[in-house]
Image (tube, rainbow, N blue to C red):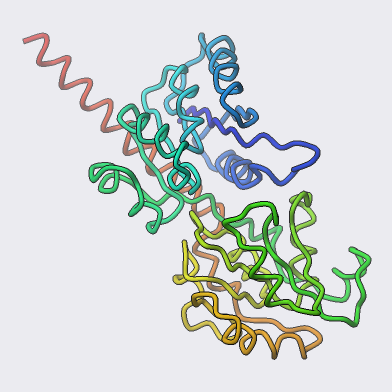
Length: 323
């Protein structure tokens, strides 16, 4: 039995119920696997919360034993180190590598991390330090294929009180996040109504995806690209920039585009979907390899290898000391 503690600084709030949902999805998938016992500790973002979380973790778990303490996001790794474990793991998701301030904090904590994960191979290439880039493993959270599935578009629109006849586009992010490029989506949508996902309850997101003629992901950067996977799991057309996992899952898939943002080119790709009442693509088969269950299995495999390596190293050192 592997006993693990997952630590995340993406605690959901009433204003942002979507925050950290992918981490909670992974914990749910991990708990569904045999031989794994997982606890989850979430806390709010911000530097003040780091100190408070460290104190909480130390007080709450000082008499507990964990094989693995796995932090999500670089800042979360610091308080996670307060909990003793055979292995301290960290998965980086994007902003913890690309933002100047959080990148520095992430760089400083990496030497204390036994197992280093990243949301995608593309993100690994951006890590600070050659050694970190070499040892990083791709450990994304994955997509919930049970929740994200094709639904009748008319039904989804009725549930959301949307016009059943007019076309809709979905910007699959919070417009307040500048790297997601809401401005590009607005320019592409023009007179077509553009829906957004900021502040939407995670349970409602599949409805919004299925209600749209197409999902727009014109991001400057993506640590992984879960929004594209969720749209494809619903067989909804996607237009996305070639960042994160996008090139891998969209290559050669009819009805989608994965290209640098060019208004004219994207307009041409989008036009057929606006004319159809229920445009769909064969996307679901593409994302099965990224299901949250498969990704959870990958994480547990990485845990087992790291635990074995750590135990073997400790035993070897003990033998040398005895001699």
